[in-house]
Image 1 (cartoon, rainbow, N blue to C red):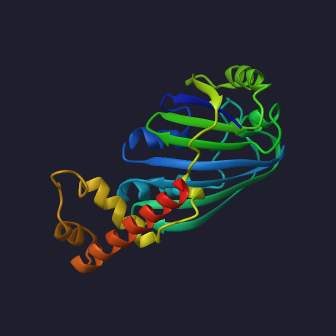
Image 2: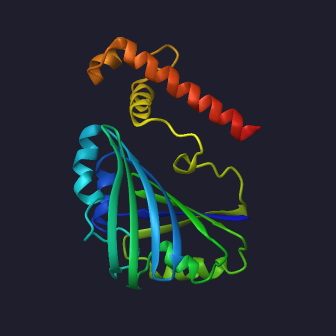
Length: 239
């Protein structure tokens, strides 16, 4: 398999969804995207961030009238549906299905005009940048993808080539065979964010418990279970 990596950099005011990531530095989105056909695709997206930032993002995250797909000056024409699969104070997981597409300059649709054989996309959004990884069986026509994207990009969106090479290290949390419970993930994310795993520690279990308004024993148990699950998953994937 081959991997094509590139980044799109957005100026303020070009894309309402990306504006939220530019304005809220704690927000980060990871998504897996796959085209079912030339007129439909699905996306599974996990967004993390501070609770207040996620609350402000929610109206955009679930707005089925908002075009979050097009990279050109023309809006996508199709039917969009969002389903909130999981919600925590510091994360959201949303499934999106876009169907009945009659026109759309979205990265996956542009790429699948030239690439065939079960192409998979990963996009990570943080700040002003959306980093795309395209997993494909053959890169024979990837130059046409590059040229078409460059020609279609709206003013205010910049393109930066990353690499084109054999695909390695494709492990995505959304596709992991071992997932954490939402409460374990929420506690682990807060612990990482607050510096619990730093040396020396920047926060105590008592302080984490106070922030989540839970007993210290509950926080300790969740962290033990979460780290145990992650360790088991790592070993199983390695061996």
